[in-house]
Amino acid sequence: MPDPTERFLLLASYEKGHDFMRQCADLGIRSTLLTLDGLRDAAWPREALEDLASMPSDLTREQILNTVSWMVRGRRFDRVVALDEFDLQTAAQIREHMRIPGMGITTAACYRDKLAMRVIARALGFLVPDFCRVLNYDELRAYMDRVPPPWLLKPRTEASAAGIRRIQEPEQLWRTLDELGDRQSHFVLEQFVPGDIYHVDSIVSGSKVIFSAVHRYGRPPLQVMHEGGVFTTRTVDRSSRDWQELTAINARLSPGLGMVRGVTHAEFIRSHADGRFYFLEIAARVGGAFIADLVEFATGINLWREWAKVEVANLRGTPYAVPAASESYAGSVLCLAQTAEPDTSAFNAPEIVHRIKKHHHAGLIVRSDDPRRVEQLLDEYSSEFAARFLAALPPLERLTPT
Image 1 (cartoon, rainbow, N blue to C red):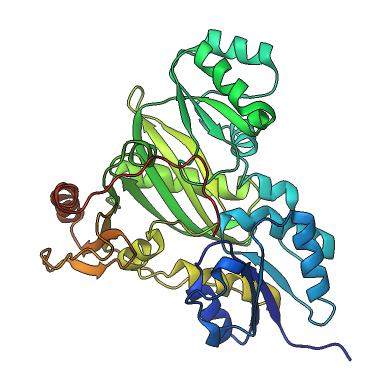
Image 2: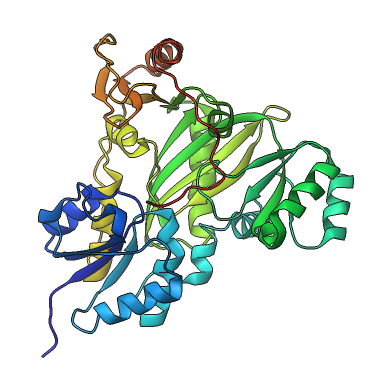
């Protein structure tokens, strides 16, 4: 007789998703975590897992598929969930091979491949910075003749701002493409649009965005990664035009790209030139840099736990309803620190609700009912963090799993 136990296979190339695992366990799901050998001894919530397996970091997708195929000889999985962006397409390949419900390879590309998401978003009528595939050289020449520099040469499947290069003139592009060699087709060339960067973090169920929260970065993440500095983000005033416009745009975008259920982290830029919002990118994951904590302090919604509830409700054929959200405002300040365990105790405003604990990082999250107070604290603290803690490293060409 088939085993009726409900089981999830979770993929994670970085240590994250602890609350997802705990929520699955609370709901009676037995989860197996497949991670990398270097993370086997990380602080995973092992009490919430039925099993933990690890593999070398250099396996191909075909080898990972073979590994999972061997695992399922003795254990059936009802769902496969990628907890990190780097595992999204691998999870999609496993689902398609095993005919497990969930996002397939083509849809996964819309949340992982910067070229795919731009092509489809533009076809759906969303504003996107003018871009060009890095494939045909005549096409690139025509693009550079038509679109004034500077341009951004972006890796199609990197996360954050890793590997992005600013291109000032055509000769610089040709030299860079020569350096990239066969890797050049894995990039997209995009017009640089000066502006303010926002992120919208969402829960999707039944092909509808049923929860979203809008936040605005301080300095653009690209600038922080390439030039160093302090990273900040804060909840946007809910009565503002920015909140209303981005909520409406995001409500159409996520389902339009094919999301049926899960979570998304989308980024938009409000152009300084025309004041309009342009789509930058979207990922089928919980935002990094402690954004999940920020959203929870602002709204009371834990994105990891709600994502798990969405997946379990779909498995069981039961309706999912997002909990009622609170309407506080939160902001975070974070930077790379010179010391391993920086002391933030000198910062003692009553609005501080969380002190971020991460090796060689200094960080705080503040919360208030007044968005102006949050903005004031972030302005003050970002200057103080730069003076007290800030360290700098060269920008990463690629984010490398452990």
